[in-house]
Length: 231
Image (tube, rainbow, N blue to C red; front, top):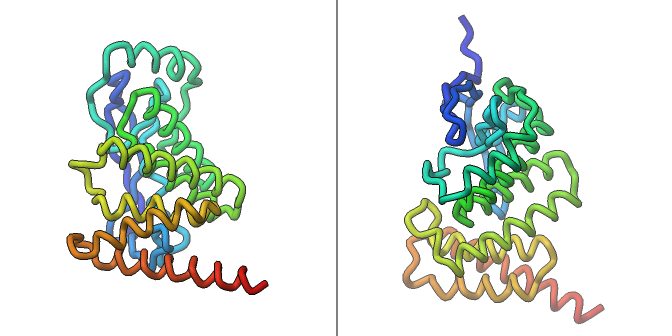
C-alpha cells in the first residue's frame, strides 16, 4: 500500500477543550532544496507544502493555534476569545489537505487568536512571516509586503521586549530578520541599522552563516546606493 505524504493528528483545543483532527505532513516527504534570504524554505516537492499545516484550527469553536502556543490564558482572555472568535464561528473543518488559500486563512486565524490571547511577539511574528511566504507563492505582492511589515514590526517588538529568550530564535536571527524584512519592504534606513547590529555580533555569535548573510545584504544595499548616486 502506498504511503501518502499526509497523516491525521488528534488535537485538543486549547480554548474549548474539544477534540478534532488536523492534517500534518510526514517528515520523510519534507526535503528542503534551498532557502530564500528571509529563511523561506523552498521544498523539492512543490505539491506538498508542510507550512500549510502549522496552524490547528478547532472546527468546534474556531480557536486557532500552533504547538508553540502556551496553555496559559491570562484572566479575562478566554471571555474575549469566546466573544470575538467562538461566538462568531460557523463550525467547519480545516482538517483535510489544504490549498494555499486555506493555509493563508488558517494563519490569519492563528494571528488573530494569538493576538487576542497575548501570545509572545516572537510567535506572532513567525506566523506573519509564514503568511507572507504563502502570499509570495501566490504571487500576491501587495499582501506579501503587508505581512512582511507586520512580521518586521512584531520581531522588533520581540527584540525590544526580549520575549524571544527561551525560544528557538537567537538574538542574531531576530536582528537579521528585522533587517532583511525592512530591506524587502523598502525601509532601507532601518535595514542598514539592523544589519549593522548583526555584523557587530560576529565575535560572539554562534551563527556565522547568519552573520555572512547580513554582510551580503549590507553589501547589496551599499552597491545599490552607489548605483543610485551615479544616476
